[in-house]
Image 1 (tube, rainbow over the protein chains, first blue to last red):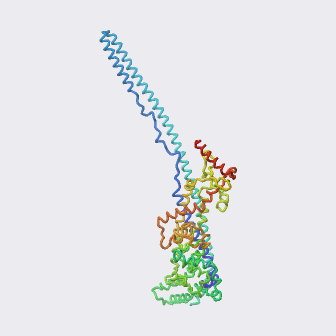
Image 2: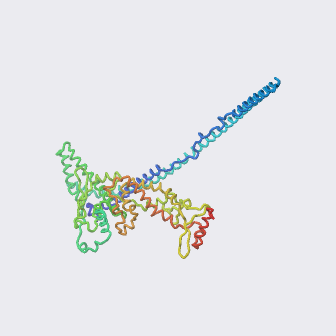
Image 3: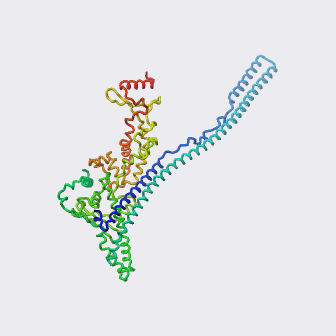
Length: 212
Length: 366
């Protein structure tokens, strides 16, 4: 029936329908390819960010003993107390008319007390220095560990991203490859159908020549 | 019926599918001429024209300077048979979309009528007042003209225009996306099912179940069942699903699916009109529930393209609902327990009492 509608040779009509079916398949494959591409773009754009559980936390590492202060307040009080005690004792000695030797002994006692306080400060300072050094060593050790951990994290993150992207790429390649193949096959079928029609077109060409 | 175009399309579809013409005595008794002879008529004078041009060139009798017009005419005529075949095959392919089961009747009904004519459907013959021409135009392009009772005004399609549309991945008649196929595939992609539940056909197997990650659990790790009343004092357990978690999981995949569809806004309108707007299926349409398609809430190609943002958002929301209600819901409702002992039918009163007691125990409310 279609032969009459289109006219010309019957095989043209058959070829036309073959070509139109192939063209339809080609269009469908192209649409599918566009749809898949849009979908993949969306998946790529909206996928979750990879959170590195090994992220660098070195900024949080510090030496808690770096700025230890020496507790001089107590020492000052001690010295002050010693001075007051000395002054009070001297006042007592004066009032009771004690000898000068007693005053010297008192002064020596006060001096010893002050030396003791100075020694205590010095010891505190030494202890603090030791703590500072130990703290610094701990900090360096922790920084080194953190550095190694961060390196591991970067490797992990790279691996994750690489793996995801490879999956996406594989999938894209696979799907797009399939739709392109379908498109190419349909295009080839269409060409075949149209080539077949050219034999029939000889009639039309003959008609043209006949017009001369 | 919501609009004239919709009515015309549905009428033509029904007319072609109904076989009613077989019972029309006037048609059966008369002869029908379907001999439109598109190519014969188009090329009837082509030979003569070609010869005249050739002779003019060879005898230096050209009208134009350097025979430019004559040479162009020769070139056009030499290329036109191939162009005609390409044009007609493209046109037939486009018009054949009107025969698809999921065809959106909001497409221009004239294409449905033209397809009936091209396929020599009863009632679309020359005898019935129809005519079709293929014209070779002076600018080298070609056009097909359809005329007849179903066409209020002639339908004219130019091959240069059609080629331009097709090259830009635009259809004359849009083929509705196969939403059923898309959603069955989407089910396997949303990450709710383990890979062993996907069959060779890339669809879920009959026994597929959502993985336990999405099943509600009690604090002690046992399943938190819902009890179904079977009647006669009996009941049974069904799994309860964490629907919020499921929705969170599937949403990015649905959004990506919609983004894929949006690569062709024609497709979005077709999917909206045929399926999404009113939650309808092809089967419903096939049952001739004519309003099963979007009807009054249809989006109109001529008016609604390009799609406004609010329509895109609405489509995404409704697409998700369609997927959740028509495809995913069957996997989240009435699912038997995976633990064999929990799947048995039991006495309802006792089970309810036990469940209440368990709640009291778990929450230290005794």
